[in-house]
Image (cartoon, rainbow, N blue to C red; front, side):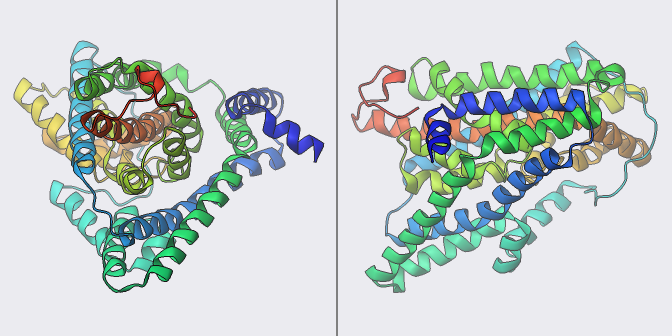
Amino acid sequence: MKIIKKYNSISLMVRIVIGLAIGIILGLISSDIPVIDTLGTVFVGTLKAIAPVLVLLLVVSSLAQGEKLDRRFGHVILLYMVSTLLAAVVAVAGSFLFPQTLKLAGRAAGGTVPTQMTDVLNNLLNDMVTNPISALLEGKYIGILFWAVIFGLAARKVCSDQTKKMMSNLADLMSQVVRWVFNLAPFGIMGLVYSSVAKRGLSIFGDYGAIILLLVGCMLSVALVTNPLLVWLSLRRNPYPLVFRCLRGSAVAAFFTRSSAANIPVNMELCKKLGMDEEMYAVSIPLGATVNMDGAAITIAVMALAAANTVGVQVTFPAALMLAIVASLAACGTSGVAGGSLLLIPLACSLFGVDPDVAMQVVGVGFVISVVQDSVETALNSSSDVLFSATAEYAQWKKKGKSLPTFLGGNTKVDV
């Protein structure tokens, strides 16, 4: 018990940094420590198992209580859409400033590749109306959200107060389980970083260093420039205290889990610490894990333009603008799992007449660099879910005359 108390007394961020450092050291020392590798697999698997049930219970409970989603919800959706489009524009601009070509070696394996935008939209609609049990089992969050809204609205109509209270208790129960799991995040992150270092090391930077730098540079530009600009336009306050809190509280975990879906419980806990209304973030966070895909839009646009450059296609400015729109729309159809954006690259490549075989080789390159690309992409996607949810929440506070958190110049104290 003394060891547990001592462990809990240390800041979670400090524990995560320690776990990260240990994972790197062990990965460099040995590539055959299966117990450490298993820690990461179990951690991500636990989060993925809990997240669908947590989302369902929180959304149903929230809507069953009779509260309506107000202007905050419309505001956060607008921020999601605008930020994804801006991310695609940043990627196009970066690719024009620093054009890239790729060393293509072989065809990527596996995966069903959409060939038209209608395929992406059809997939979204099919996921939305999938069997709710299947949606839970397969982690299809657009379907979980759809049925949770239906069940929540129905419960508000027909359920007694006692039943609604039971739903609220179940949601609280799952939230507590998530807190217990996330308290063990340092061990999970140690396993995840060990696995990456032991299997791939730093050799990845040799052949594809330039394209990785472009991708990461565009993602950092969005995280530190365009997204803060959107926050400032909404709040008229210095956005960076909120930006850095979201990066620290969400991006670090998302970087290693490489799954927006798995990071939903982490984001839920961060929203609670930021003093936000659970009825708001219970819906906006899982929705963001489905449609708020800044990093995915960047990956799709950069890789598509690199493919065009590789085969000698001259991309015009109007075509580049069309690519930004297509990439932002396609990104909304990206699954919230590791590597989800890569299979949408051929869709963007088709705009420039790139041969499907070449496009699939580009997907193969994406899988090679994914240890860096997908980690940074997920960190951007997931942390911006919290960033924009908090922005919409605090904008409502400001409008109603409620004091903002102290880190934004107000008087309201929050835990983060």
